Amino acid sequence: MEAAQTEAPPAAQDASEATARAPELPPLRIGIGYDVHRLVPDRPLVLGGVHIPYKQGLAGHSDADVLLHAIIDALLGAAALPDIGRQFPADDPRYAGANSLQLLDNVLKLLAERQWRIVNVDSTILAEAPRLASFIPEMQATIARTLGVEAMNIGIKATTTEGLDAIGAGRGIAAHAVALLMHDPSLQDCACISPR
Ligand SMILES: [Zn+2]
Image 1 (cartoon, rainbow, N blue to C red):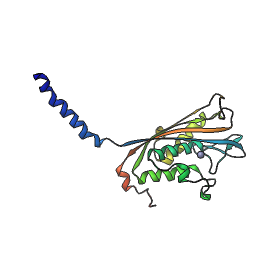
Image 2 (cartoon, rainbow, N blue to C red; image 1 turned 180 degrees about the vertical axis):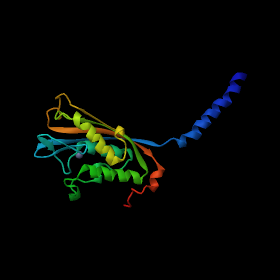
Image 3 (cartoon, rainbow, N blue to C red; image 1 turned 90 degrees about the horizontal axis):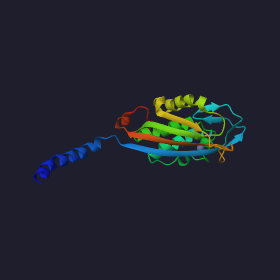
């Protein structure tokens, strides 16, 4: 009994120290994004900001870059901001044929204004065809350059659905993405942020 009493104070002190340290931990936020577009003739195929030679392209109001759209929604979701459809409405003529890298750059500014720094992004493209592996390094470099991070922080995988669904039948391409943000007060003075 006496021993327990003498051990109690250090344990309480540890808990108190842990509580005191908690506010210093960097606030992290995770987000998830998903998008799908139909494959149609007479459209360029653009994935991750890279033009992919293929007999079909993705249908959409903008350039229909399904990978960037999933990443944009993951980033917006992590910051609890309105999704891509509300940021860049499909019936807004300003975004007709829009380069999705420009939309991604707009999202980066929205995050920076709120002092959110991108830690990393991971993503998976679901496509029966074409084979995308050889284009992934260029996609990583393109996205990393736009987001101002190292390419090692941009994960991109490509897989098929083994012919099991509409994607597998070659009727479209889909993408999933997750993003991690870290609050960074130093972004407050960032000269790259233009007033909105
Ligand atoms: Zn889309």
